[in-house]
Length: 596
Image (cartoon, rainbow, N blue to C red; front, side, top):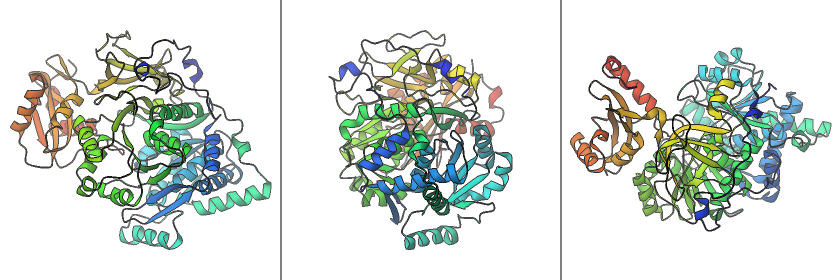
């Protein structure tokens, strides 16, 4: 394994104690510090939970038509052991070898990922929808030696594999582990009716055969899987989680076992009052390869013996209907667009989940109108948190007990310090916006083989997030916007989140995205893209905004569109809106000065 590029030189160092803004206002409901780690590594956590909840259903994969398959905690444990044996004994991979996983939400995902962690290898989560060029970059950069891929995308491999170090391919399907008859029906529909499963053009081992080989080798050699992970400690690398693809070349955030374990403990500290061991049912519509669902849905809820209902594809939103109707969902995690979409479905608003305890929002700003409507319809809180890939991901969360502030991303999770700074790195005054920087045990070791990018992101142990936030007198944080999305109108700062939140209050607005575009008079102008669900005209939008916002923040341009470009987790991609605008207006860049 390649060295981690002096990641230890960015150690967080001693942390000052004393008053903890936010935490001190919770009357002891939230601990100020984290307890000592309960497990030395993720494999130990997985193994212990599998033993505690052996007979309980761990995962159900629910197709849009309700067809499903399920695995218990004991079955997940046994199958992931078999995959660990296949990697180490069958493929001969060494500890620390990188294994890429390119899967949507399906039963194969926890089996494969837990097997990789148990084998002492390093997980490389990969978006299944990546184009060949994106796959090549991530596989080459990570040095992945093996790949687990869903059969729907194997046609890309002849173009990809020759440019990578991958020598072993394992193929699985959405219906893997389903009952035999159901599996045959699902596969037949996908292959012959939907025509989304191509013939495999490369040598690949079916996952079922890989597991059988792992079991055979384990029995023949008397290998004990725990021996693979017994020496893994908090500093051992667990995953390369790639990020930055929406702003440039993707970089692999090095997340250690300790980083991820700390974040699981931090999630527990903030939400544990609403999580009962062995009783929860969590709906996983966000992709597990994304760090939000990976840490929250996969790891944190597995530790507590939850039943995880996996939805392979949440688009269209009707794909969630059978999962919500057929299972006693008590938790939902998602992004603003997912919750907004559910609230526009009659089947959801008429019959919201009866067992729901809470919902957690992250990934992008939660609009106040969505949060208010959610709580009115479901009678349960929709709380916003904040994080990023580099912090495993959670940095702050709105408490479910004590004081909860709508419109806020909450308070720093236990063991985490937050500092808001100006462009010179100096702390800003209370209530003033500044770049959010953080340090804590969940912050990454650095970027894989990117020492310069690591030094830029981690300065004196503080992670610079690139997000602008403000903190009130009680220690609650509010995200103002991304620094790179800031709009300068005649020298005045306009934050897209604020304008989007205002426009979203209109009943006829389904979704909205706001960007800055070049303008010859003001340097930049505010441009809003709106998806409507009723009659709406530009004058009505502007009149509404004039009542809520300073005049320079009111959109000068308004475009009504059928849909907005989104990331795999549903985040509106402002960069794509800007790129499309400049493509449609090729002389725009010379008409104004966006950077002035």
